[in-house]
Length: 487
Ligand SMILES: Nc1ncnc2c1ncn2[C@@H]1O[C@H](COP(=O)(O)OP(=O)(O)OP(=O)(O)O)[C@@H](O)[C@H]1O
Ligand SMILES: [Mg+2]
Image (cartoon, rainbow, N blue to C red; front, side, top):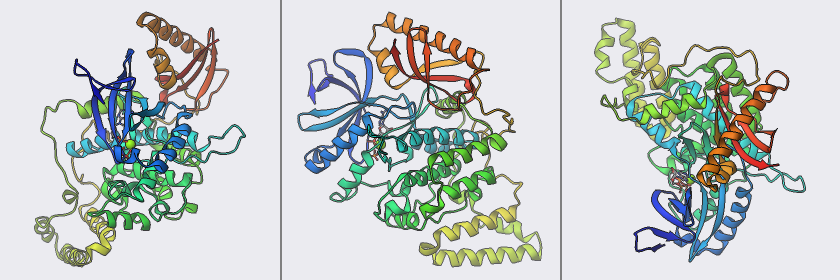
């Protein structure tokens, strides 16, 4: 990186503005094109010692080629891949927003839940991207067999407009290869692997389905189901696919969602959803019958509220808070002999579990939590739920699977469309954006009654002057345009 007289750092054709983060293989920077101040990118710069490994780089080039071809509103697009000096880099869309890891952490810190409605909304968006990638075929119509391999909260971005986007397609394969020679590179990643991945076996789309199940579990309980004190223990938990029932950690999770999680987290991949679409269909059923449909606007409001400056001190809670404390014992004694028996049994269980904690950590927690819930009764709340975190609301049943448009839908531009607009001078950019938005809304409103379009799918539209690729987000509040071709 070359530092200029003005203090800005030049990196090839880019000017680096700030560092966003660092992962196992790369540092990520926010950057602009040196000759076009308007467009912002995220530059993923591969750490120098990996750039020297030829095998690794040729694998990265192959993966990047496939990733560049992925164009979907829920996938962060890659625009450029190359080398500056000894450093290899990937330039991609910069997503203004938060990653899911930060969101879960902030929820824990503030003592807020992510509502089942929003968690399922995020899940559907993630699955939409995975379904698209898993089904990609080459020019000879042969399946490309793309697997993400690292569906983890750090790789899920929620943009300021409430859209959900996956990062790093293909990177995990390269990182896995690098890990064969470098220790520590997979740090923090074991908790999101599938059992077959943890055992080093061949993986397919069902690995991403398992990891997506972990995401859903973590969004709803704010805990990774397999994470333990050491990486070795975590790996062992993943291989066994044993976890605490999520409803013991958050009693607002409906049984129907517990079933979804358990199907996705089956140890044997034959028992899981066979395809991402099957996973989506099950979620859709639960959304329609019970939980309701979250949307981009709702998600955006939730994130804004979550990260806004605090007016009241955050409520800190730990897992221990959810397990009965010794002080509870006194209360129990007042309940008579029956309760005393329960207390003694509980203490015995605690002692046994404590002695065998390394072997029985999952079972111990299950027993403790079940006992606690039985004991207190399911009427007492384990901790106050913030109204913003969203208790599951009473659901409005949807009678139609056809998306509808709200009165004034918002049109947003993403991916290729955003890049196209970013290259235009401001006035042209405004005119084109407004023109496309108006025509697309008119086009959709005209067709609402006559031409059903499948819920949430990427669609094509022929509007005067343009050919568009777009998607109507849940609840018809937002239309995301991902590509504009002038006719
Ligand atoms: N395109 C992007 N737009 C905005 N932020 C990004 C983008 N890409 C990455 N980031 C941020 O940079 C951080 C570091 O990313 P990176 O992918 O290097 O690490 P990681 O995902 O934690 O680990 P790894 O990818 O090695 O498994 C991410 O957590 C994310 O918040
Ligand atoms: Mg990443």
